[in-house]
Length: 87
Image 1: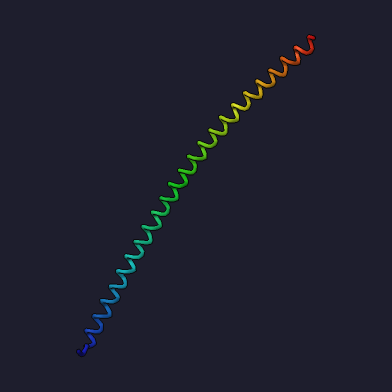
Image 2 (image 1 turned 180 degrees about the vertical axis):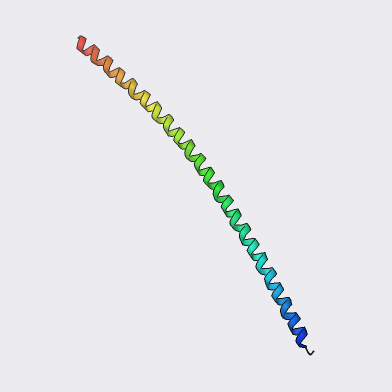
C-alpha cells in the first residue's frame, strides 16, 4: 500500500490529536487525584484533631480527679495533725 503525502500528513495529524487528547485525559486524572488526596488529608486532619480533643478531655478529667484526691489527702493530714496536737 502506497501512502501519499496527504495520507501521511493526515495520519500524523490524527496521532497528534490523539496525543493531545491523551495528555488532557492524564492531566484531568492527575487533578482529580490531587483533589481527592487533599480531601483525604483534610478528613484525616479533622479526625486526628477530634481524637486529640477527646484525649485532652480525658486527661483533664483524670487530672481533676487526682486533684480532688490530693485535696482529700491534705484534709486527712490536717485532721490527723489536729488530733495529734490536741493530745
